[in-house]
Image (cartoon, rainbow, N blue to C red):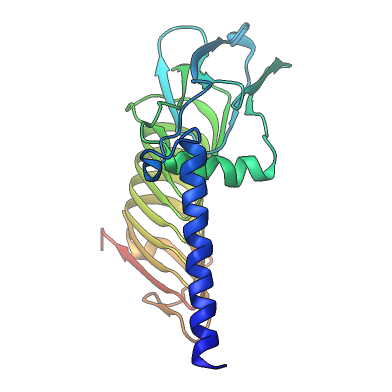
Amino acid sequence: MSRTLKALIIGGIFIVVGLLVFLTGYYFNDYNLDNIFEYEVKQKDPLTFKTYESSNPNALKMISIITKRMPVVIKSHEGKYVTIEYYENQDQSFDIIESNGKLLFKKQDMGFFKENISHNFMSLLKKDKEENSITVYIPSSYAGELLVSTTMRDISIPDPLAFSQIKKIDFKNSYADIKIHSISGNILNLKNTGGNIDCSDIVFDNITIISTNANVRLDYMSSYTTEFLINKSSVEATNLMSDDIKIEAVSSQIRLGISAYSIQFSIEIEKSDKSEINLPENTGEQLNKKIHIKATDSNVKVIFTLD
């Protein structure tokens, strides 16, 4: 290819990009040539604050919140109702269904292009960011299941001692954080892709942590069984207390500080040649506490803090 042809191709690319920038600014500036590069996106249909209150909170056994690109905050209160605060307009609406002991709150799908491309582009261009979160107020005595799924925004339970007898928490998030502090219950499942999991002072019977391209930080976590399914992630856990620990790690860095003596655990290890594990295998049948590690191209270090 000649230099002249290369120059023409590069020049053509710059012309096309410049034309797209011009047309975008022209459109979002209401076809006005003044200050077209500021990209001022006018909100034609502003978001309206709304509230939903459960009609029969005593019968609820499951609360499910499914949304996209919205932070979800879970708060406990001493009242008897489950209340959801959210924002809605003609481009953002929710389906709310309450029946058979289940409360389902789900954002309506706008279609692939509008949901994943147009909406993201418009959000980047807006100068003034509107409040657009979902806050769920749940009685502290709630003993059912709590399921939350969102993307690109945090899921959090910010208040300490929010719940003490919840049956199950199942949080799923992508490209944002999951933050939980000072709660207890039966089952805790946390799944994160491309973000962070940050938990402390957690007491559950069964805990499962699933992460892909994520950072996991845990402190003072107690359970009967703890399972880590870790892929291309880093895990730093301190003051971990558990009788049955399972670790499956792929291309990851794992550091666990277990509040126990090493002689209390039987240890089973499966690893690839490129993996490093600081523990020797010990399959003593008389031991009632277990650690099973399966590592592929990973570094796993376990420290028993009482040794």
